[in-house]
Image (cartoon, rainbow, N blue to C red; front, side, top):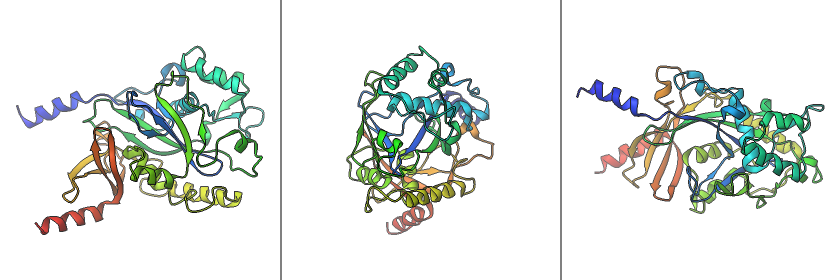
Length: 343
C-alpha cells in the first residue's frame, strides 16, 4: 500500500467532531465556575470542567455540516447552545430582561428547576421558554475564547467553542446578583438534577489560581484545555493571596485587563483554534509534550491556527491527565536538547 493511499484511508477513519460549546463563567467576584463529573460520565470522567455540552439542532438551531469550515466558527447556534447547556447543568440562566436589557432575568427556584427538566427532556424549546419568562438569552454577553478540536487519536471527538461570560460585578454585599449566587470561594451550588445526577455531582466558583493549585496537588483532574485556559486567566482574576471580596473598581479593572488580553495575539485568542498534537515524550520525566499550534485536519489548508508559543506537558494515567503544565515551547525544546546532549 502506498503512503498516499494509507494517508487517505486514515483520514477517512477520523470520527467527525461533534459541535459543542462551553462557558468560562466568571462570578461577581471574578472567580470561575467548574463542574465536577462523576466516574460514570461518558466523557471526561471525574474531571472538573466548564459548564457546556453538545449542541442540539432541536433546541439551538441548524449546525453547518461536517465538511463546512463554518462548522468550526463562532455563531448564534453555538452561543444559544452554550447558554442552554449552562442552564441545564448548573441552573444559572444567562439571560436579560426584555423590558430592561441591562438587567439579568431572575427566576424563582421552582421556575428554574421546572425549566431545566422541561428543556432537558425537549418538552419545550429553550428560547421559547426564556421568552415566556420575559427574557432573551444574552448571546451578546458571550466573549469567544478559543476553539478546541479533539485530536484524531481520540474516538469521541468534539469541535468546542469556548466562551467567557462576566456576571455583573458585585457593587455591594446585598447586590441582587451576588446575593442569588454562590460567590464565596468554597460555596457549592445545587447539584444538577436534569440529567438524573449522572453527569455532574457538584459545582463551585474558585479563583483560577486555586483551581490550578488543586490540579497540581493531584486533588482534582483538569484536562489540558481547562488547565490551559485557567492558566491564561490566572494572572488577571482574583489571585488566592488577596481578599476574596475586592472593591468593584478593582474587579472591573481585572475584567478590562482580561478583555484586552483576549483581543491580543496573532490571531487573537477569540479566533485561535487548537487541536493538541503530540510532539514528543520528555526524556527527563516521561510526560507528553503537546503542541497547540495546529487547528486539526478539518481545517487543514485554511488560515486557522492555534498558539504557536506555548505547549502543554501532561502525564496520561488511567484516571486521567496528571502533572499538567503550560510552558513556553522554546524553553521546553531547549531543555530537551540539553538533556540529549548529556546522554
